[in-house]
Image 1 (cartoon, rainbow, N blue to C red):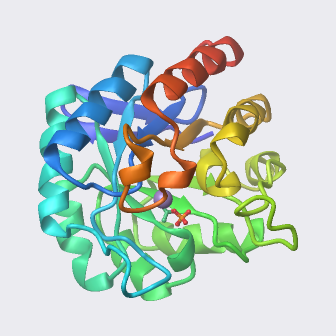
Image 2 (image 1 turned 180 degrees about the vertical axis):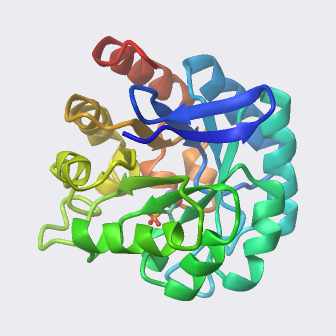
Length: 258
Ligand code: PEP
Ligand code: MN
C-alpha cells in the first residue's frame, strides 16, 4: 500500500499503510471566525486534515459559489494556526495553480471525476490529491481517473468513496462500502470514505463511518459545522462539533492508529 504525505514541514499527515486521514470541516469556507471555531473543535477531537470549499460546484448557479481566493486565504491561515494540513476543491483548470499555491491537498470532486482536462492539470502539480468517486462511476472508472493524475507524474492520490446515485432517495446517495475492499484489491492507493455526502443524513453518518473503517478504509471524511441551519451549503448533513467528537471517540475504538 502507498503512504501519501499531505502537507509540509512539521505539519504532515500520512494516509495509507495503516495511517488514517481524518478529514473534517465545513462544506464551504464561510468566514474566518467560523472556520477558526470549527477547526479548533475538529482538531481537538482528533482530525488531522482540515477541509473547506472555496470553489463550490453547486447544482444551481444561483446558490453560493464559494468565496474563491478569499476562502483559500482563510483556510490557509486557519490551517496554519491549528497545525493542520488543508484540503480544498478545484473545479476549473484555470484555477489549479491558484488552488495549489494555497493548499496541501487538492480535491477533485464527484462532479469532476471525469473532467480529464482538470485531472491532467492537477496531475502536473506536486500536491496530494483527494479524488472523489463520481456519482455514476464504477470503481474501475475511479481507477482510470486516478491514472490521469498519476500519468502526469503526481503519484500522491487518495481515493474517496462518497456514494453513488441509486433509486432510493431515502439517502442522498447510496453508500458503497464495498468500494473500499474493491479499490484495495485493484490498487496500491489509499481509499477513504465520506459518509456525509454518501448519506446526507447526520443520524446515519456514525454507523457508516464505523463501517468504512471496519472495511479497511484509510480514513474518514466528515462535514462539520457549528451552526448547520446557517450553513451556506450542505448544512442538513453537517455534524455538530460535539457529535463529531463523539463519533471520533467511537472510531478510535475501531482503529487505534488515528
Ligand atoms: C464536497 O466535498 O463538499 C463535495 C462537493 O463533495 P462531492 O464532490 O463528493 O459531492
Ligand atoms: Mn459538501
